[in-house]
Image 1 (cartoon, helix red, strand yellow):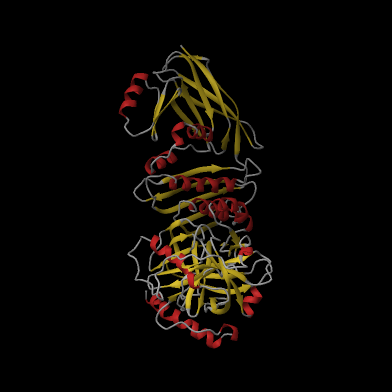
Image 2 (image 1 turned 180 degrees about the horizontal axis):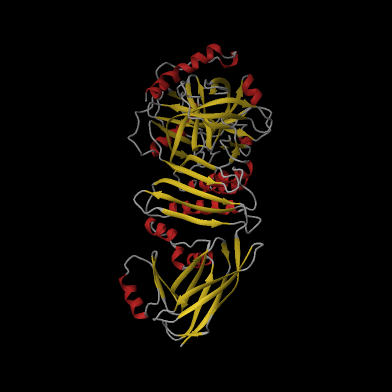
Amino acid sequence: MKQAVCAVVLSSCLVAIAFASGPAETRLNPLPPGKTEIMPLSQVRAGMRGVAYTVFEGTQPEPMGVEVLGVLKDMSGPRGDVILVRLEGKKAEYTGVVAGMSGSPVYVDGKLIGALAYRIGQFSKEPIGGVTPIEQMLEINALDRSVPPPAPVPVSGVTAQPTRTSSAGGVDGFRDLLTPIDTPLVFSGFLPEVVQRFAPQFAAAGVTPVMGAGSVTGEKQAAPIIPGSAVSMVLVKGDMNVAATCTVTYVDPQRLLACGHPVTQYGRVDIPMTKADVLITLPSPMNSFKITNATEEVGAFVQDRHDGILGRFGVQPRMIPVTLTIHGDQTGDTRKFSYQVINNARLTGPIMAATVFNALQGVNDYGDDVTYKMQGQIRVQGYSPVDLENMYAPMDPRIPAGLQLALSVGERFSRIFDNPYTTPDVEGVNLNFDLMPERRWARLETARTDVTEARPGDDIVVEALLRPYRGEPILRQLPVKIPTSVGRGKLSILVSDGDTLDRMRRTMPLLGRKLDLASTIAVLNKEHANNRLYVSLLEPNPQAVVEDKVMPALPLSVINVMEGMRGTQEMVVSGESAVNESSLPLDYVVAGAQIIQVNIK
C-alpha cells in the first residue's frame, strides 16, 4: 500500500524529471505536484502538443513527444471515441508504436487525456497511434463493485463522465486502419509445437499466444508503479509461465488503470498483477515489441473491459496449484512440475490442457509410441474430488496419446466450470503419469456367448477376442449373471470399450441441459476407464434418469408417479434399460464394441 501511495506522488513528479533530462521536443509543462488533473475530451483539439510515457528498457518510464491530430468519433464502438496522435522523439520514431506500449499515459498541458492504445496497421512509416480517452477508462471504476469506491479523482473543473466530440477533419481516413496495440499472451517454458497446437483453443477463448518474449520471475522490484510503468497480467506461474504486459495509465492509492483496451474482455476477473522489467524493446518494420519479465506481485486485476483493465493493490488472487509427476519407464527418471494457473471459466481448461501436454512432451521418454497411465485428482472445495484415472495409447497418428490425455484433463475443467449454479473453488490438482514405450492398445474383434438361450438367474459366459497392436490375439472370458427380473424375449448384450458407454450417456437428452456442480462431479466420477472391457445387459424396458442418477427397468406406473413428484428436477425416460454391467481390467487401451443377443425363456 505504501508503494501505491508513493506512486501517486511520484506520478506528478515524473513529468518534471523527464523534461529535465529528455530531448527538446518533449520539454512541456510538468504536472502540478500532488494531484493528477484530467483534460476532458471536449477540450482536446487538433494541433495540441503533449507528452506520453512508456518504458523502453528497465523500469523507468521515458517521455515521447505527442502531437494531437484529431478525434475519431465512435471509432472503437458505439460512443467509443479515439484521439489520433503522432509520436515524436528519436526512440518513438525508431521503434514506432510497440506491442506492450498500450496504456502509455498521454498528457497535454500537464493534464491526462488518455492512454495510447491503438496503432496504424503494421507497416506505417510514421508512429501514429490512437488514444483511449481517460474519461472512458474511468468508467471501469463504476463497474468494479468488489470494494467500496475510491476517493473522487481530482478533475480540472469537470466530473469524470464521458463527453463525446465530433471527428476532427482530415482524420476519418485512419478509421479502418486503426487496430488495438498487441498485448499478446507470452508463453515461456513452452515448446513451440505445443503453443501452435493449442492456438485455436486460445483464439476461441479470445487471446493470442506467442512464444517466450519474457518470463515470470517473481523477483522484488524496488521501482514503484507510476504512470508509464510496465505492468503484467499473469495467467500461469511456476515451472511454466504465461503473462501479458502493457503500460500503466493512471494510479491512485487503491487501483490502477492500464492498457486502454481489453486483454480478454471477460469483465470481472481475478488475475495476478505484477510489476514488470523491460529487458529490451525490439524494433521491427512489421511489429515492434518489448521483451519483458513479470516481477513482484502487487495485487490483482479485477476488471478487464472494453476501454482497459483495472487492478487493485494488495489483493491476493486465487490461483490453482498444480503438481504433475512423470515417471519414465526407459530412463527411470521422475520429473516433477509445479505451477499455478488462474481460476477462470474460459481459460483454465485450455491452459490445463496446454500445460499438461507441454510437460509430457518435455521429458526424454516422450515419443510417438508412448502409452500413458494417468492417476490423480482435482480437488474442489466443499465437494468430492474429481478422480482422474485412465490410460491413453497412440491409436490415431493425427492425435498423439499425450494430446488425448491433455485434452481429457482440460475437458474436465471445462465441464466443472460450465455448471450454471455454483462458482467452483478449485483447491488444487495432483496428477501422476507412468510412461510405457510401446503402443498398448487392443481392438475388439469378436464377442460371443457360450449359449444362445438362457433363463432368468442363469450364469453365462461372454467370450471376447481382442487383437493388440502388433501382438498375439488375446482371448478373455467374463462370467455374467442374467438378472431374475428379466422378462422373456431377446436380451441384448453390449460388449464394448468405456468410451462407447460414455458416448451413449452424453447423447441422452438429459445432458442437453446443465447439471449442478455436485451432479457434474458425480457424472465425471462415473465415467468409464479406457483400459477395461465392459459387458452391459440391455433390457427393452423403460429407464429413468434424474440428474446423475439412473433407475433402470421401471414399470410405467412408477414412472408416471415419479413424473408427478419430481418437482423442478428434469427426468428423462429412455426405452432401453442397462440392467447389469461388469468389466474386466486389461493392460491395454480397448477399442471397439459389439452387440450379441440371447433369447430369454
